[in-house]
Length: 143
Image 1 (spheres, helix red, strand yellow):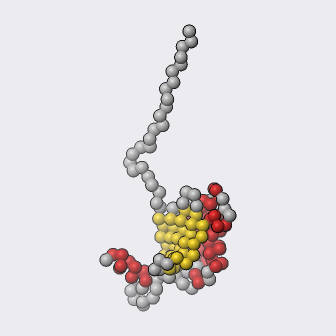
Image 2: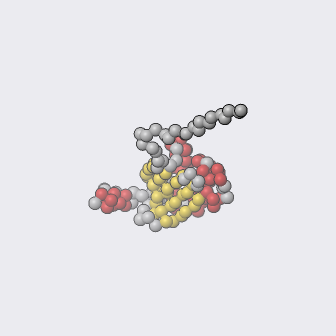
Image 3: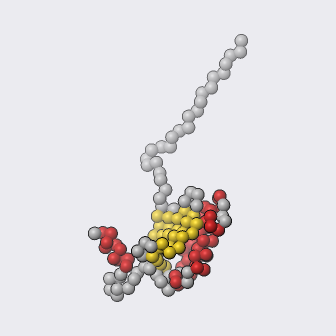
């Protein structure tokens, strides 16, 4: 019931029956790669790109602002629709300062209606970190 209500809320506004969001841009930062997906509101993929497609290697793929901005430039050159259609932007595992800088640059070029930030970093709860074992070495006596 809640999921259907949420989808219908995104699909139509309450008063003027206008689409709130047409596309969803998700910017994901993994420990080894940066990915950008563009889906329509029903979830059908329209565009996919990763940092490896732009010949970025090793640490360059996860440099936070550089890799994502490089991919977004290619995205904006490919799609001119985003200036008129409302778009939702999802940030996944990006630092807040990088999110704000990327969002400022995106808001000049596309019509953003919604911004959601997810942080999916695991933690160990309340437990302390496991201590490293130190080997106790005894010296042998020389006779």
